[in-house]
Amino acid sequence: MKAIIIEDEEIIAQVLQNKINDADPSIDIIKIIPSLKIAKKWFMQNEEPDILFMDIQLSDGVSFELLEYFQLKCPIVFTTAYDEFAIRAFKVNGVDYLLKPVNEDELKKAIEKCKAVILQRKPMVADIAELMKALSYPQHTTKRYKERFVASIRNQWMPIPVTEIAFFAKEVLHYLYLFNGERYLLDSTSLDDVEEVLDPDRFYRANRQYIINIDAVHAVKPVENSKLLIRLKAPNHKFEIDMSRERAPAFKKWMGK
Image 1: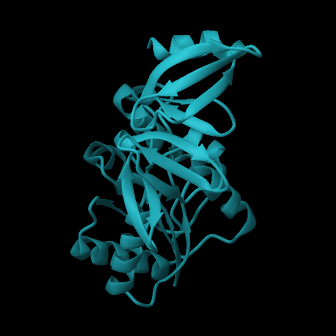
Image 2 (image 1 turned 30 degrees about the vertical axis):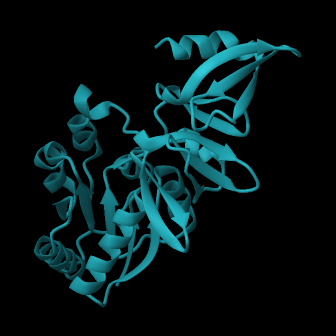
């Protein structure tokens, strides 16, 4: 059987893949999809899998939106860190739900339910109205921003909490700098992708090369050529980031939030 995983945290997705392989080696994970945007594109270009393991709250939206775009018939196992979601919505639509961190025994039970559905040849029909109703409460409609990034160091992956990141920089490659001055290679294709998943109250896109954390800003000084010079706090004070003066009102407002 072929399956895909939709999960925006790379490490969590790989752990889930390993657990699925251990629980049932006959399941082939053909794709791990990290965002709602990429998932929509994938389903437009590919046939649906036999089983779908899907995180609910992704960095760029709620994965239920996929069920609005596509009439998926495969059994779905929702994964979530939010117990409230599961209680109110999942058993109406999916085969099962798994609370993070995923328990191996619960995973095996969910897979068995999926197999039973496939053998019965009864397509899953998602009640979109019911799912969206479950998300109508204010505490569940707040966008969830990325909490960690995966950095590469000495052929290893390391999770870096967003709270420790002073700024992101596009040099020859993409890097993140910590408040302690350490620099790590960032596994990202563009700063646009990074900006999209950051909390805009905490991070600001100063120019094409830098995204800065408000707590990293020491001072801002107008300079010649109608530009602003953003000075960062030590030990990152050697970085002086320029920004157009036209953006000064918006940047000042952001600083004062």
